[in-house]
Image 1: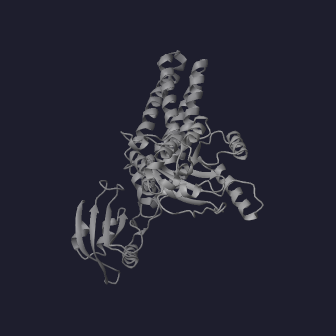
Image 2: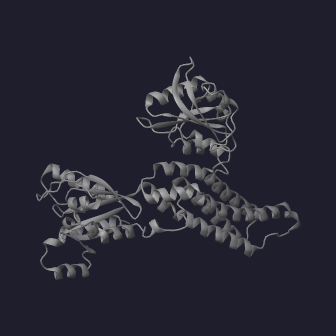
Image 3: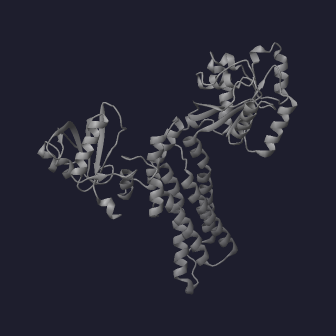
Length: 467
């Protein structure tokens, strides 16, 4: 443990600003003496863990700051594994900052971002994947983000990675044992069993790497661009999707000149909808810039909802744009809808165009402003586009790795792949052992079984102070 990690730290654990209460956390070997030196109840100095004390907190000159509640937790039975005192005072910056100053004067130092969680990791209360889940839980902005963070905090990611690591440890142990008896030409590991173990590990790693997509969706949400010609009803559709008037709606074509963004939750996922300027050739310099920005937004989108005026249909310029887009971004899901169905007097025409593959959905954004259920088909299509149907109702907890995990898991899978090829070629056990060690090292970096100061700095610097 770094020497600085043995000091006593203090920080505000609640948000700054006016509130009913504020909580100041203190952790470290001198946590209880530091608080007791400023506390009116002398019994706190010898307090046992899991006890609650009420009294006045004073500054260094003995002046009363506030009547507070102090909860004592003795290590290792605390959140950080150290002695911890949580001081609850009245809310507001003035009181909370005065409490902090008194504790700093008594010997505590300000906590660094994420330092409380880092100490929990260093004392074995959490592994590294669980520690990262704490930050994900704090920043969760959707039900799915919340659920994947809770699952990771409960150890779902750690358990999955641990299962792979355990199978590779078993494989590596047998190979290393053979190396120890290399001169006697003894095989302790059946080659078919080794092959099965490596195949199973590769399959589990593939599943874990694939879960990074879910992790990205849960944390970052889905960026959906509404594109189409001017006056196709994109702004009305945006307002209907998010349930409020975010975009200006006007019968005059070209009203939208710049991107307008709004968010809504669908199926537990956060969707960021972007209303863009109409796509058409124009001599108006401002409108032309809006069109350029609309194309740029489409190029960076996760899903494109292309809105067509049902009374007009797709013209040649639009078909050409969509064909070019399919070549340029073949991986981009495109949902093409016919809007303003309420203004079309010939329903058979709409059905014919839908059957012909021109569009997949027929909607009226105007009707949806008063009847949100009218867009349920579009919502289902959006979930299908990002392969997220049913995730919100999934049972048993979800496994979703983050980008850092994904990089290490891919490196581990590459090492396992090399080991499989080495085994198939009948090469020496020393090469096989090196590949297995590399895979185990990468897996250890996910959970913190193997770690470096650089990794810890990168993880915990993203936390807020006080957590």
